[in-house]
Length: 138
Length: 70
Image 1: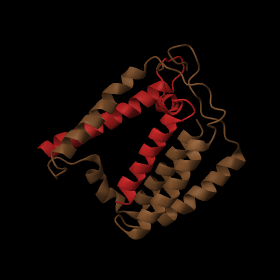
Image 2: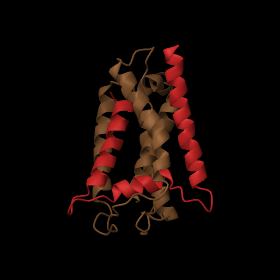
Image 3: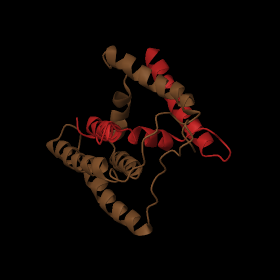
Image 4: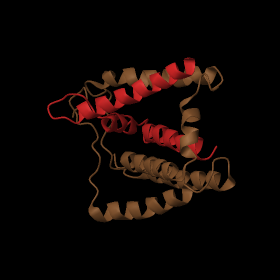
């Protein structure tokens, strides 16, 4: 995949199996603990702020010195992502402006009942951590 | 009624994202994956400041707080 100016789009850095094991060994226990912490609790706030803050710092500094020069142009075909992303963002904005009521629910209002279930909460937290790993490797 | 329409719109958008990702991973396509788009944003810098990384990872952090803590 190339950007519009012909330069390669930043590919995810390959992770060896040891790194994958290390990441899974750290992320899975965190998700298992986080799944037991209900929303609005002090524990949930502290965990997300501390873990998220530490990973944010790692993600911002990791590879930043040897990252390839940024490209100005988007990869060809990128604008086809605008429709679903625009619908999602637009619906979220409209529902938020209308008060995020049961008649006009935001995405998070719809997700809340699901996230009260422990397995779903653990899986979602693991997905959140995996999303970090996916971005940090780029 | 509006609740159902809202949920349907969210579902359509999510299905659309899934279809685009699936198409982007097929051989011989010029469609970038969602990861490619994130990689483009992450590479954006102003001088030595990794603005793209700060913005995207900051958004990621906020999403975690919004869904799991607030």
